[in-house]
Image 1 (cartoon, rainbow, N blue to C red):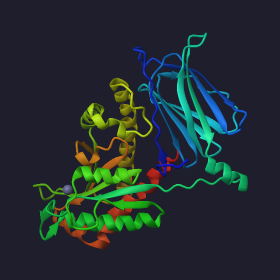
Image 2 (image 1 turned 45 degrees about the vertical axis):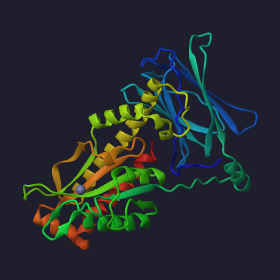
Image 3 (image 1 turned 30 degrees about the horizontal axis):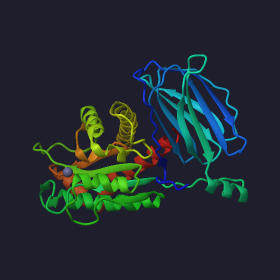
Image 4 (image 1 turned 90 degrees about the vertical axis):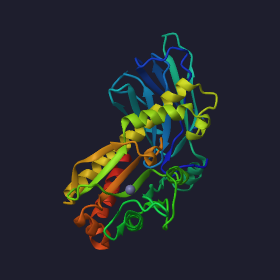
Length: 374
Ligand SMILES: [Zn+2]
């Protein structure tokens, strides 16, 4: 089995809801059984309602994640399986319960489907997970299974070409963002991450293309780098933007409408109806949004810890088009203000610029750690 994404193989599944879509779903039980082939484990969730769910595999410390529209769950389950180490349950209180199965090896999702109500009037969500062939070969050679993954980041130097961005004193935003992105790339590559840039030189790249580059590279994180500018010269310091709720809702609605919507989510069935698709997209967007916000918070803390100047309210929300990827956590970082003489000088000098870039790279390291703890 070939994995499309290095870090996150997102296989979204869905279900038509028989016109009985309800958020009052309760997880009554979770059962597992190993199949005689010794490679497959069947997971069965007993549910009071048939609701939307998404399921994906994380390769790093192999985990199976199920996000399910549900309000309640039993706290613990007695699972006995060759492939499953343990299960963790996280109820966000907002109608989605995340089940994380810690796995003993790298698997893929072989099947996932709903069975009709059983004699206890419960729906059964069935998932078959299977050890991947590659892994079977590996484990026969050596029992110590090692999973390799590379966290991938796309850095987006703002502006370029015809669009200089802010121009103040003798500095142009597009030059500073490109230099900063290249330097940050160097820092991150030293830490072992895979890094792509949306532009390597002074050229114009459309916002949509910038997002597409991130997508094409199966990025785990997208960071757009800018330098702000305002009328008030005294304003200085860094800030970080994530997509606003309003913009985010709009994106979800728009995407759901779009004809090519199926391209967005690997593995989703083309026959899925619009309503269910919106719910799924919403689940995915919620995860992306939370991840983006969590990165922003980590960055703000790093900046403060490192004594770098930030705006009074450094984490902000806006409808920037470049942040609208539904499946890649995305942030826009304003390194400082070109309109402030001190910031302008600070950011145009490689040595002083390194300080904010260090905070940014440290934030990425911390963020990667939190993601692998899911
Ligand atoms: Zn800009």
